[in-house]
Length: 384
Length: 236
Image (cartoon, rainbow over the protein chains, first blue to last red):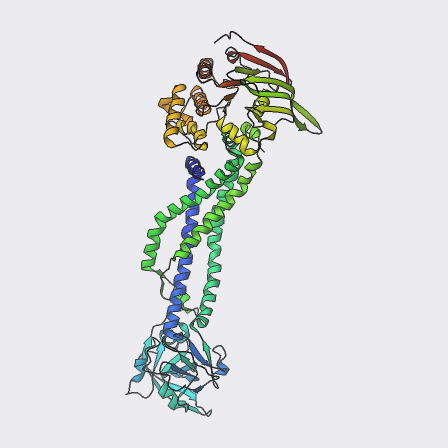
């Protein structure tokens, strides 16, 4: 093996420009694969972190009838908050309408404890005393409803008996969150105010757990672990990963095709060399090994080249992040203004293994032919 | 086996399929070669010289008959045994030199020793000695494309001789060389034959080569036409 490596290195070094081109293209594959997957992993980590901090906490207990994807379940999905569980942050959800500048907008009204510490929502702004119903909204909703801090707007809702009521709410703060599911079309208010408005005192639609929370045995509440809640994000990002992989699969395919072509051409052009190796005492199997190692050596050299320019590139990108277009932030997923890629050990090692293995396989396939070569024909350069 | 007998060919034939028929490159060749011979297989193109040399060098196998080289039956050798035979006991010199283009002169000569897994110091010593035999010690770091034809063939001789084989097979070694270089090469090989006791078998139709041989086997249409001992070679 040591001999094969030494000979292979000399051979591909001697191949000059062909080697340079193969190595450059393959090194691009390394960098692009690691870069794109790093961006996806970075996005995944950021999206999970933000979603945990802003919405999911350390899991949720949802009322058994509550389905976040079915607004018709909201009206009946509420139950008394379990006693002696101060670790749980109750959220009461109602449908309502607001009338900014005379336009009617349907919204989701969410009541939350103003003193809660589990979620990053600026609920301390809900404790203002000078206004009857202070609320906070996200920047996306503020933009779509054209509401600003200090604005007052008419809110209409139905109480527990189905009676419509209305009052003025006051925008006490606008928060900037990457999580659209706590922002779009939602108004957060003090849960005490909402209890009073709806007559559903001490009731909640869901309960957010903090890191010390123990499980709750109850027939009224369904427990959703943090992992279950985040699975949707993971599935979306996994799908995005597959679609983005098309780009680097194409690039890798080009690089592998170049290696394959080089190998086929090598075996044809280097017939006499192959014959000479055999005449000098190499078995044909060893010559196959030599040519295979030569092919996989492209990936080793590409790895070195990719490390040379890829490492500073990755460090730079990790430091400054990748800006995300504003339009992309409106797609309903948790995307920050900048994504900071994460280049994990498994990503780098996995990529190296995949590329080296793939290049070894495409090197071996044409090299197999050598095992059937007649050395006499090879020495004469008469192989077809 | 006779202590001086190194090759024994018995009723050896080699045929190739051509359409529905067979072409016989060698027909019932029976002969022996002995240690230290400086012999040649001579004949026109297509007479079977190279085929015979390839069978002796275990690069090819006889269709019928037997070839015993250095005590090994060529027909029954595994790939590994055949490779070992060539690596340790037989040296090859080709008409077109067949130097490995990406290696230096030193590395070309060193190749066989690398396969033998010799240590670095052993290799260096042997390679430099072989290059001195052929007068190219000062060209050790050159690439083959920087050498003349004569120099390239000298490197090929050094490569074949560096492992000090019992047998050296040279297929038309002077065909691509001018007269002066051809004589230089042949003198070198004759010296090595005398000093190291290596047996040489040439395949040639070059008169210059024949002038150095102690034994000439004439081949025609795959058959031995004549086998003559030369007691006083012209250029000895």
